[in-house]
Image (cartoon, rainbow, N blue to C red; front, side, top):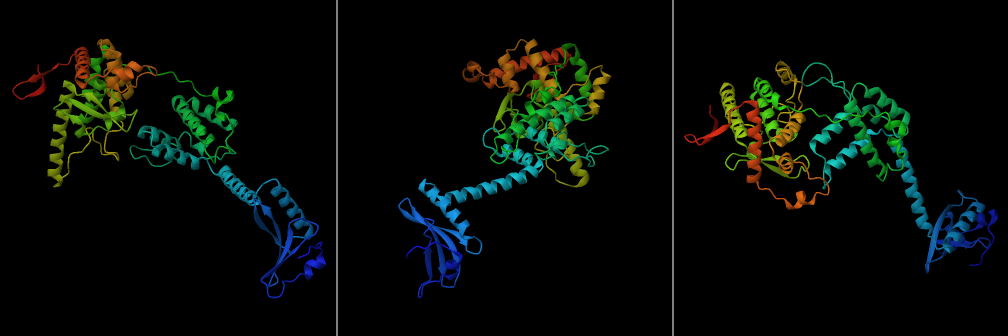
Length: 458
């Protein structure tokens, strides 16, 4: 069909040829521009050319939506792109993707940071390699709680999470001024927690900067500016530890606690150097009285258990505790006419987790004060074990292995070549236990032949 210059009159006069479904008329002025007229009378501009050896046809739009000049401009642009080997269809897809990305970006800019914060926690909890431990998850959850709810234990309302005032903001609102003021408002009253909150926020912000959606929303190095870093409280490492002269008083204070579970838990913390949560989650099926070993969940690697020796005094404490728990359970079942089973946890609690959570509470602190001692947190007891292991002349490598410390980076010998059997660890662990008990004036356990068990022989 011959080409004609498109005019308004010609466009109006174009009709579909008799007996055909559609007819295409071509513009003589603009290469590739055509007008398709269907049997029903619908008219639309099209563009057609050869691209990569094949016919490429693209619909521009209805003639009522586009003027002739507009259609010519679009066709000229399409021709220019195809001559450069640029596929107009791909350009259209790219524009659509870009448009959708802009919409997602705009929505994300207006969403509060709580949205990606929850995604951040879920991703790191579910990842295959090195997923977060429960303690780390709890730290993040605690930082973002709403607060203002009735406490489950004690009077009053729960406190708002330290990071929540920042997490309820959106990306546009989070800036250097806001973060600096937040640091200044909290650093005086809660310096340690504020420093921890800042570290968690900075790790979260680094995750955002690598996220497909959020990376374009963050301000680069926002949390690393001099103004912000100069307001982060500097918290020195806590170095509180029991001294040998305090051991007798400490054991006396602990044994005065009303709960045998708390008494044993605190003593075993000191005598094993375990982390608070590792020991709290200990189950009876992981205590091997016959082979004198304990398997505890390793905080450094949640996927594995760490085997430590079951030393004589600790064995007595756990044996007596189990007997006491069974006796108490039998009495309770008798009173209530139930058949409740013994808890799987060595240090049970009536709380939601089923095991002891906070043993270093008010009664423990008051008991220490009566003996003239300052408050000693669970981690202080772990530090005390390491200190006293050294005083007992036990090698640093043995102490670290019992405590579950990873060898220092670059220490290939300790990490890959020194293999200490549980028997070797037990011998050295018993030396530490004997030294601590001796300093505390506590009788050393001895084997009573008649009962074939360990006991304190006076």
